[in-house]
Image (cartoon, rainbow, N blue to C red):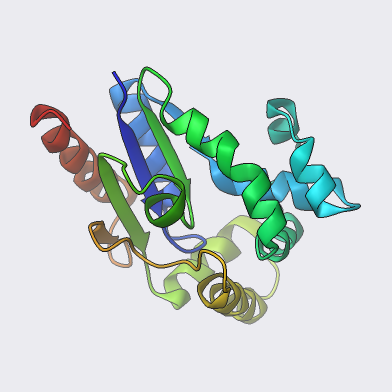
Length: 197
């Protein structure tokens, strides 16, 4: 069975947590596409060359969840040649037999516009910054500034800007706990599966 769940949204909205839970619930493979960009940014050097030589092993680095890796990812993701080099990797993963969940910034709009389910997971910048601050500590006002800066870069880039696909279901997690958000996503995927995709 080929079945793709595309989950997009801004940083710290909960899409990674929801994606992993949905993949586990349905036995689908999961790809956090942000890790591709984080790995390219963390590898240093020429980002285009790094994207072309990226391997699955590069996605297991210990430093990919840091704030610095996130900022580097947002910068290299704005380079069209880097994005192009990683598109095929993502599309092959998405349409392989057995079902897949991909989360990122442009899965439903660019990578997998044919996905059977498209979700856009969001939350207010203040809520997202607080969540990120709980992960990384430091100055919460600075974390909010970085979240807003990243939003502007991700939503304002010329190539594949962050935005919901026209046919995506929006889940705003601002006032939700993890269980409620996951339940909503699981119900949407289950409904689509029961209708044959």
